[in-house]
Length: 354
Ligand SMILES: CC1=C(CCC(=O)O)c2cc3nc(cc4[nH]c(cc5[nH]c(cc1n2)c(C)c5CCC(=O)O)c(CCC(=O)O)c4C)C(CCC(=O)O)=C3C
Ligand SMILES: [Fe+2]
Image (cartoon, rainbow, N blue to C red; front, side, top):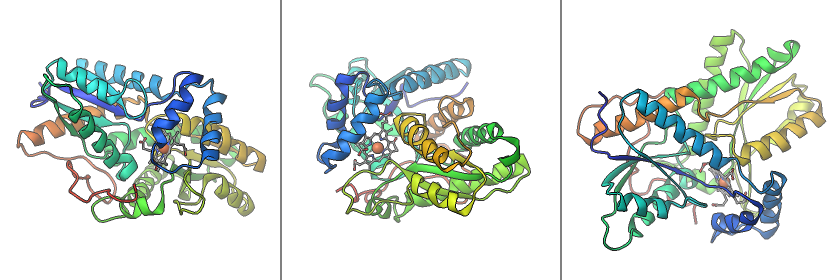
């Protein structure tokens, strides 16, 4: 039987999103508190949510992921209850951790719906865990919360991305499929945040480039067609004077149209589920850009509840449990960078967060 000791629960930590139109403004206030996002940008992003009835898909997607994890744990003899908390919306992480304390959870392993290193995608979640532990009401012992390593290069996550991309390629018209450009997409962050990501800097960008190479190589093998690939960015915010990672997906599509590209597959490798960044920034905006430019384009599914991703979560949990018991563990990783550390050293992913 797999051994989850010393853990007595799994905590899924996510971003959170609004459920109804009245939630949108308070949600955006939560996200951007102290982050210096211009008012016009907030109004614009609010419109993205209103276009979808004020409801982000992310909460339903997390519920589906939890159901898939519970089924996978039950089928594989992993006896851990699953809790869920968000940074920016209900169920708030602070409330969840208080409930875990009241339930007598002493130590939980934590999986975040974010696969890469950077202040936004790793350190800020660690800070959220620490703050939620500190906020446990008097009279209860706060559980210890161990976040698993950034898993962008875990073979299960990568398999899910490969499958999504292969299905999107299949869906392109026959005559352009072989000439399609593989365009990997992730969330832009400020250059300074990338410069400060990981223990040696630049990890956010380097991790994406590495996994994009790995996915493209796998697609080359499975389809027997070599296609060029590249990484682009979406969802830039902040002040226009602050440099963020570029090119923007829409700007790049303009260039690709001028270069006469035959077709494009957008692969949202930076995202774990098809949340608002995917359904608005890619499906609504970028696919409209491609359409206007006359480029046949498809958007690949993100990992979501792909069985290989769910298995990867089980593997990450059991791997960390064994490591905490002091047993030798093999940390699965594809690409050229090796597994990311279990525990971030001081100074990892600081800065850039202002
Ligand atoms: C790296 C990264 C991820 C991926 C890792 C992860 O998943 O955590 C991510 C995910 C997400 N970002 C999301 C939403 C938003 N992000 C914003 C703003 C920002 N994101 C940033 C970075 C990231 N964000 C940054 C550097 C900012 C600027 C403010 C700051 O410096 O902190 C804003 C403010 C308005 C705007 O300016 O866009 C919103 C509304 C949602 C929810 C989607 C839904 O509702 O379905 C999700 C999953
Ligand atoms: Fe974001």
